[in-house]
Length: 322
Image: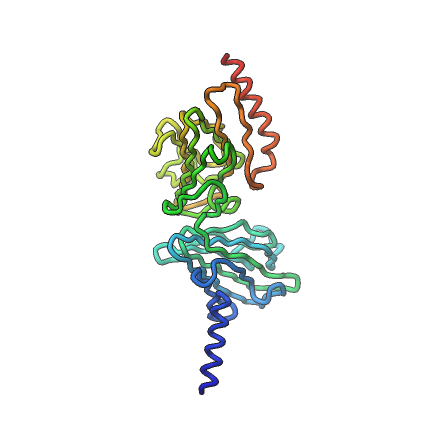
């Protein structure tokens, strides 16, 4: 009896050290208090998963943490029949919990690696449904992370405020900022503030290289639209409209050395967000034009060609106004 107790304790300790609480070899709980990141896979990965596999992977974070899922490999059995939905084939579905019920974020199937996924709260469930399998399938492999930075790596986060990031010209005169979880799908029910602080004689200029925010004009609550808004104050600035959809705003410049950009998503639909560049411009020198230079490799490939036109147009505008 003593030997059995010891064997149980050893097995239980090894289970905790792995960071996974497993109900079966297929259903698993990943707990933030045990491990902040790791990997999970379909059964028998990288070999073919058994037919009729149904696996639930639950991710349980703490406090204001978000769950981020990044797929590294994805090869499921798929039908050659056209028009067949993902749900009718082998697939993976990500869910968040809303009012005690699971709400679908997205469903993935086929051989294309899905975009990154992020929860709107501290929990997420990923369900794998391998109905058919086959000789040439591998299943999937993914990384999970419990994060508090919303996947945003630029600026300085005001952690107490949540998704709020500060950009000071004293630290960088230009750079980039983007939606949470970019280039993956942005999370639902999320508000992010990007605060720009220049010197007294400086103005802030923003320019978007990528823009996909679900919604229709005028981007209001009635149309259940997600949106971006701009303000020269810490409060609402009614003279600048909200933006949503796929048409990016033109270059926008602040009236003073402070500027605020706010991103808001609701609980309905979502998109892949935005990627933008910013620069602090010396307002006392009308010929001073600083190029927008992203500080990460997240920027679009068309930035280089777009920048030249941007600088030339600004220069012509100065000549015409003088």
